[in-house]
Length: 162
Image 1 (cartoon, rainbow, N blue to C red):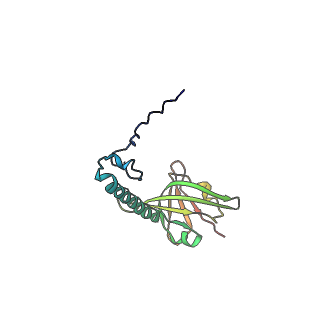
Image 2: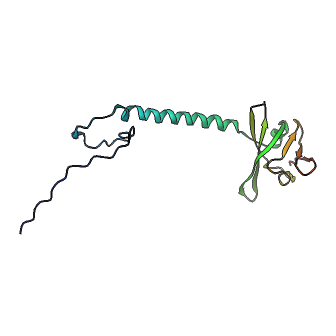
Image 3: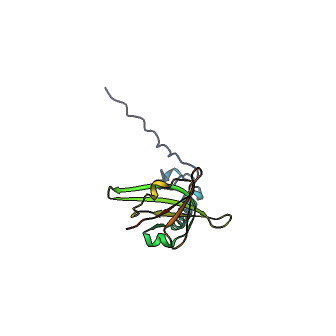
């Protein structure tokens, strides 16, 4: 008994998305004589490259604005007059806990500036007495911070560093 040979099917065409078809190479059978769209291989990678460069520039400029300030001398030189936007702790181990505050200040009528303050070696209870939405006022050259709250009197706390 003879077996009949299997019928050979022509190779299937690869599925292509418009503008993204030949972006990663592997362009199917070149012997099929398919027409190639000039946008597939030339312009689309350029668009991706431009978008990548724009996001990179945006990331570099936004990360330089939010510089973290740490240490007693740097904090003493700063002046604060803004609201606490975020409050979090970065626990490295039980001996090294970084208490971080993000303060948003209104510089001009339309410009807001964010400052991230690291209270790493602060030994007082400042961290426990502040919460988001509190307004902090601190003058330059001093470690006294006035905390304005909604339902309590304004409190003045001195930052304590070793």
